[in-house]
Length: 192
Image (cartoon, one colour):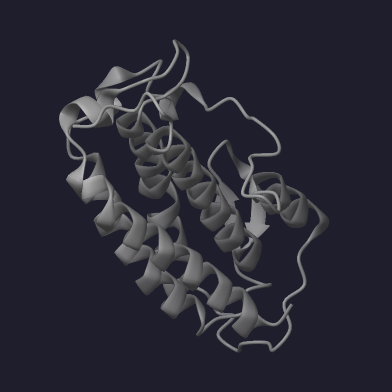
């Protein structure tokens, strides 16, 4: 994969996520945002709160590493590390936009364990964060995506190449937007 292709992919998916939430999320009522089809399933508000928590960690990490790196010469080709490829592939949706593997969220990022993550401003926060992410993607184009390393949220010791981390976060966000889509398309989803 080339650096240009990678950045184009993460930019397109991120813009699609913004467009979806601007079109549907902003119009959802409180009842729609809080609706769950079964116990143990997250509501739209909980899903978006979870994504926002990841943004609170990864966005500053990206900005700090991009702004403070000495690896400012870009490379045409991007090669994932085995760990990085495994990480983002595990998040990536299947061919039919299905979620292939389920994961348990960390307690600190899980609105079922920490209801205070749901503030009532999830949709607007999400859109603002994703617009910020577009800016981060643009800045990432000025550095070496292979040499800049980002510590992952569950372990500061384990680090992913910037390109892998951008793909991981992007596919994570897309995965959760698909969850929102699945809730919205549920035949029992409240009309308003």
